[in-house]
Image (cartoon, rainbow over all chains, first blue to last red; front, side):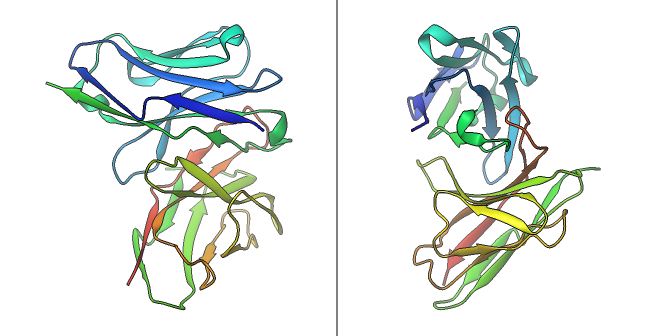
Length: 116
Length: 113
């Protein structure tokens, strides 16, 4: 069965520090990979996605992620955290199991805390 | 502005009552989805629809029902058979295809009285 694992349900960083949120997936074929952000009591917003081509993907708000097929990973990074980055982050994958739909499997989420 | 709207923002359900959550999109998307979000459990798929008048069960469909009579609308009914309905419900839509982005509505929080 397909699965997505986000290592660490809570990550805390200081303002200005590197942000690293980890995501690993299980898939027998290269998947499509997504990172979403959710602010309290709101819907999810797409940060970035990997479909094909360049494995380093740049997204909104200074975030980027690198698809590493050999490690089945798609970790999210940002060089310098800002207070406004405090939110919950979800990694998601679609693949062969999705058929021709956009059906996704989500990780459990990682809450990012940014300390002043 | 194109987007997805969900109403109401908060909904209260009494014991034995069915309640319906609204989801409307004006993005001209074919596919629509309903998710349930509980703390620490990520998003779980309840139902999805790829086309009008057709829908499929997701991972946790028991106690829920949907309809898709119009492309723009995908209402979710939480029936009395759903014994633990308290959660945050999110609706999303996308174009067809595995690489397509899902766009989410603002959510409805359902509480039991």
